[in-house]
Length: 534
Image (cartoon, rainbow, N blue to C red; front, top):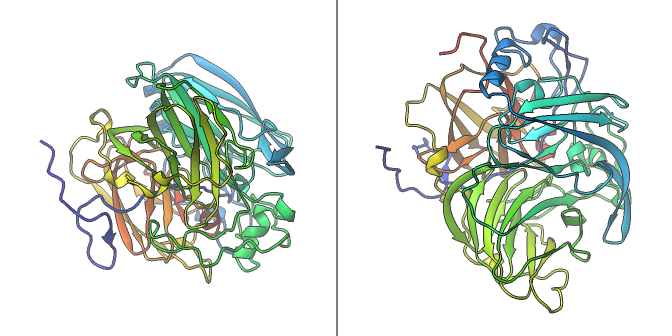
């Protein structure tokens, strides 16, 4: 029998000793790291760097840990089997894109927004020939996937970054069905146009629906009035660069100030974000030029919602409809009806709706920022809702990740915790000195685990802002039967506990998915010890 979950409030204040519990307020996220390259033997070879987040010198790289290309990683991949190969190509390239009648130069996958949808079946071997035509080195990170460590796309930890004009083949077995996405993991590159959906279909899909709609949310600043993410990071860091040498030296700030002041969200526990984005997009389109999805009245539609933004949580609702939550971060949950949902950076939610007759706004309100993104569902005649339409469902019933129960099929088996890591989230807007346990990221950091252990991560937010904390290579479970996720929102002054099974050896990033927080130091590495499997 599973132990009865304690009845607790949604959040656990971190000012007092934490009790076992699973309530707080959601999560999401963006990322960035770059600090040294992997040599041929898998040992980190660092390059000089200064400032916050500096790389480790070669002698500082700790011994006794699994290497990304080591035998433990290869053995874990063999245990996943060997399915049919799906061979694809992906190109990172500068491009001119249209945003609501405005031509903007940015970086893209395939020359368009969003990047090409990648869709395979669970159990397929995915082989992606990636070519880099950008002016900077880059990688591709396959967000949310449980995959082999040397394909995770983190320069300085799992692979060499791909230089301009060169290529790399990502090849790995897909395992868990679900809604995922891909993006770079170098500097603040993700806050350009470099993202795309990755859908892993279930060959034994249990849900019944007539149509599917993939919805990708994004906050946009690149190329608007001369702004770019590197200059914004430098402004936020008060003129200092982050020290991650994979990113080109930040230029002098361009365009108007993009620092967001006096934003507030009760749902997020205080300040909503750091960056005042001029545009918010759904599937690469603005609210005054929205995407229109067509269906017939009565159709059952599965909507896969992905937040690919850099600094913005969204409150999402479909006007005139109730949504049934079925999955979060690719994992099934016990179904729950809601009017609206809150989705942080890098989170994903799947919902089912039964389409009514008419024309309806799908609205994503930038939480605490007063702007919105919009698309349209059309099942009949009538005028489309105008830009800025705010359906009443946005203020209706809100179900968060902490109200959801894990589906029995993906629930962790009951067992005692073998290892616990306390992760205090620190920093401030004034200094922009984001860190974990007061230590900004360096590539030598390791929080050790051993293969076979049950691990508890305890996130304690001692900072004044919310953080969507994301773990690579593993789903975790909100304690006591909560949803399985890979990203969780940790509000200011609160503590979140999650459990995971250490069953995917390697070196795995753990970081805030606000791209400006992670690039300023709020990230670290969960590292498997190089020891026999327990």
